[in-house]
Length: 413
Image (tube, rainbow, N blue to C red):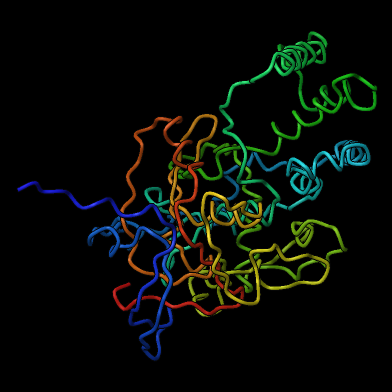
C-alpha cells in the first residue's frame, strides 16, 4: 500500500482558534475565538521558543545609571544641522512628488527633527534587552521595536528591494561612479573621503547634475543605520562608543511608557509623527519605577490611537477586516506593509542578519498572545533571508484587527 505524507501546513500569518483567554494583568477567564501570530506552540507541534533563564532573572547593572551614562558616548545619535534642514526644504520643493511615489518622503522629512539624548532612560531599558529573542523582557511580558514602529513612526518603508541588491542599469552604475568621485573631491585632500559637512558644501545648492542623488546618499548614510541595538557592558573606567541611532529607542519608550515621557508636542497637519518629540526633555528621578510597574498602563498600540494633525494609516480601522487574497488580488500598499510587519522573518542589513519575531509580541499588532513557537534561521545566508522576508503572501484571507481592540493572553502563556 502506498503511503502519502501529510501536506505541509500553509504558510499563513494568523491562526484563528477557540481558547481560554485572560487579560495579561489577570482577571476573569473567558473562552472565545482568538487570533494569534504564527508560529505559536500549537502550530509548531508544541515546540515553544522559550526565553533564556538569564532573561527571566536578569542581573541588574552594577553601576548607577547616571554614573553609567557618563561612560557611554552615543556616536550614532545625530542632531540635524541648520544646513541639513535647509537642504531638505529645498529638495522637498522640487522632488516631493517623486519622494512620495517611491515611499521615502516621510522618512526624509523626519530626519529634520531633533530627539534630545536621555542616556539614563535608554540604558535603563537596555537592561531588559534579550539578545536571543531581540525583545525587551519586562516583569509583565515581552515587547520590542518592530517593523511597524520604523514604518509608522519614522516613515521608513518595509517594502522594496534588499539593501544588498546590485545596481541593475548602466545609468545607476555611472551615477555611483560619479558620487564616489565627488566624495573624494569634496574632501579637498584632507582625508580619503568627505565628511557630511564636506559633502553638503560640495553639492548643496550648486545645481550639480547629481545634487538630488547626493542629497539622498547623505540622508541614507546618516539616518539609515542597520543596527539598532548593541550590548552595553561597562567593566572598566574606559568610555564606550556606541554607533547606533538610539533616538529610535527613546521615541519607542516615550510612545509606550506614559510615566517616563514629556508632554508631546502638538502636530501640524502634514507633519510626520516624530514631530511629537522634537527637542523635548524629561526628568524621571527613578527610571526603573515607570518601566517595571507599567504593565497596566503600557501602550501596546500607540499608533492606533488618533491624535490631532496626524492621519491614521489605512490598517488602523474601527472595524476588523478580512481581506481575501488570491492570484488576482492587488493589495493596497499600506495593507501589504502591515502584513510584512506581522510575519516572522530575518532582517538583512549591510553587515548583519537579525531575527524578526513578531509572534513574541502579538499584542503590539492587536492580536492575542499565545506561547511563541520556534522559527528556523537561515544560517547567515543573506539571499535566502531576503527571499524569505519578501516572499508572497500565502494566506487565503488576511485578518486585520480593529484598532482599539483589547487583546488577551492564553492561560498557557
